[in-house]
Image (tube, rainbow, N blue to C red; front, side):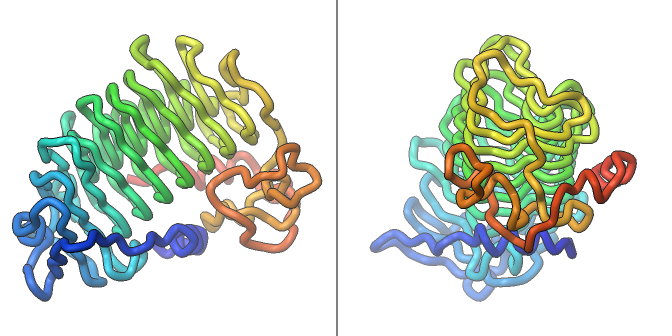
Length: 346
């Protein structure tokens, strides 16, 4: 996880501490030895606060959050706080009954492996928010990193998904009949053996804004796949969908998606968008250094709000300027090197 771009993204998306007046804070590992022990101790409204470090072994993977409305997060953010499943299984299941959302923030999830039911890292059966988290190097059947299930409402805000893979669909996220609110998040180098290299909708809704998709792979869709008649509403706004080495940027089998105010460019399977789409730009977004995983914007990027080439005068994508003017990455690298860069290594 020594990627300069990932470090920049995590720093930019570092979550604010979450607190609820009158609620208890349970510290891991100083008060409870494992994350599961902390979660088991928590009541609705409490916070399980995890100190910096890498957490492995029993009680720190396959964690079941069975109490609604608790907060599980880090003291120092995702760069300093890692849950490493070491290939033993998934990291977290949110199974809590009730309508109060569980909040998970400021954690890195890596080394998770899911079966057909579970995602590689986090399986959400009940309403939940993921904020400022990093998912890297997880593997699942449907949902390489995260799987949403059971028709609830879920918010994914300011997260990074890098090099996750799915044996079926949804290299990073699989949405099954849920409402997913997706904001200000980054998807780089995720892969599906089927549809939705980064994100797949098997029914439900998606409302997405301000996201960056770079170098994801799938067939037919590298970034976002909508492959079910039960998909009801899909809107994608102010996002970058670019440089997919396999598959198109967006595949919408039933013509339900509306893509607007996005930059779509350099996807090997094509840059065509669903018929309802409008006001999009098919030009190079000019990212700082794809080879090093840095998908912040060059000073001359048309995605910056200040750019005279930006027709909407608002930031497009999840990240702002990260380097000086750089020109097009296509002129610096061959397609072969881009494909090799984003091919998932097992």
